[in-house]
Image (cartoon, rainbow, N blue to C red; front, side, top):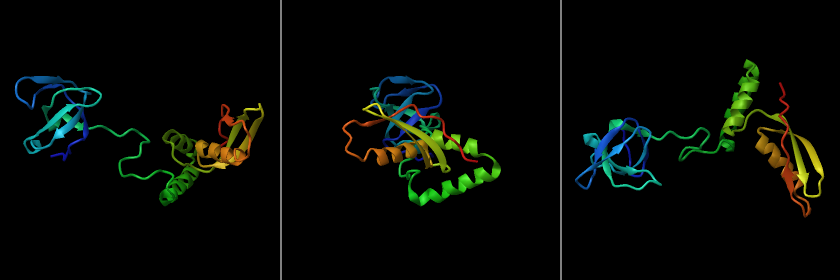
Length: 179
């Protein structure tokens, strides 16, 4: 038994035909469809009551538990009950991973991975350009663990004045990576 709960969104793994829970007739379901669990009472017998996941609308039908699996979490998405990658309680993990990347010569790969996941990486130097509404371009070199944090630091430092025109990020230059 997989232990599904009411409200879980599941992914159909094989095509099939499910009987409507209300009686006559049924529905064809296809591999890749998403369904929403409406009842788990028959789970012990190998079935779940489901309906097509929103925004689709449909009647409740039964599906064998061996034809569904949980919808995978998106890469970089914080799982339910999880903590943010910027939480100080796990900063040690990223510091250790950055040191290992240095030792193993994997700096560029590690930096790309952290950037793709949107998580803090090694402390690197980023070049950030900002354009004010007055046409003044300011370029700053900032040490930070991610481009987003570097841009945030520059905005906080330069945007704190009483300028009427907001600062806008220009197309950022590639990071200068320290080895």
